[in-house]
Image (cartoon, rainbow over all chains, first blue to last red; front, side):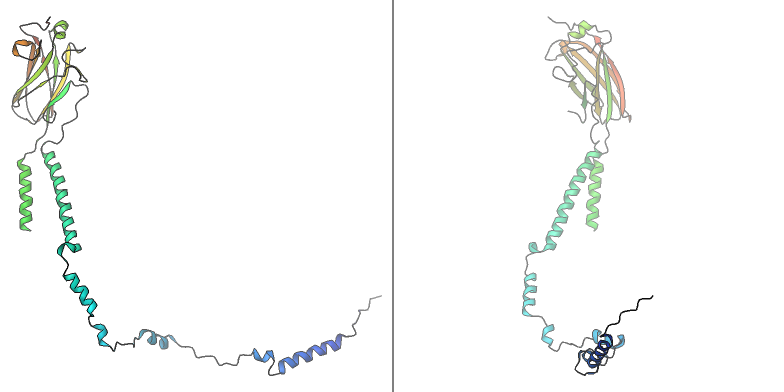
Amino acid sequence: MRPVPRQSRFGAPLVLLLCAVVGALVATPWSSAWAAEDTEEPKAMKTEHEAAPQQAEDTDTAKDKSLLTHKPADDAVASKQADQAFYEKWQFWAVTGGIVAGAALAAVGGYFLYHSLNGGDVRPCNANFLGCYGQGNQ
Amino acid sequence: MTRVRGLLGAAALLLLAGGCNSYHYFDITVDFGSVSFEEAGGIKRCEVFVSGADTDNFVLPSTGAKRVACPIDSNWPELGTFEYSTFTDSGSLTFTMNAYNMTPPMDSYICVSGATTLSASSAITQTATITLAQGNQTCITP
């Protein structure tokens, strides 16, 4: 014998009550369902051609011409640079350093060249010799 | 620019005027020849004279040197080899060695001597031998 499923006494009235509550929520204008609805019209999308000229174009032209003229502070700096002594300029020290370094290199190179042209160093003395004498030796 | 070139040229001429020297070496070996060990043992001092295309003189090492020549140590019948360097590349060079039986060195104290002559050339190294011979007097002194 098949078992008969057990039926609840409150099944149908409960379903009807839930449907009524949901319907009231959706149909009422001040309900939360109505508030979630977006009624705003979408804004028109700007194309690249419409946006670019506004970014590239600089309409902020200087109307005050005095901003472009030399200020007293600029003149003071310029005159101070002009009034610098020659030894206070970096160009002077750069040229002086170059001359000194070149002279030192020329002196050292000249010495070695002269030494080389004059025979250079005498060869080392053989350890088996009694001694080495003459030019380049003591 | 012209001045700089002139200075560089003058410097080059100055350097070239100094000449290009190169060393020439003469390795001279001294041999006692017929000089006996007893005579060689009486030598007190050895001096070498260079003459000819170059002029020089020097004393072979005695006491205190790494290799002692005169008085002799164990270097007999061959005294040893010395090297002489010079810029001379032409003419003749004569090496004369005198051995003295007393100091200071004087001609009257020469007991053994010898000489050799070489022609200086472009050769870097030349070798020769001085063969010593007994002089008029003995090297053995009381």
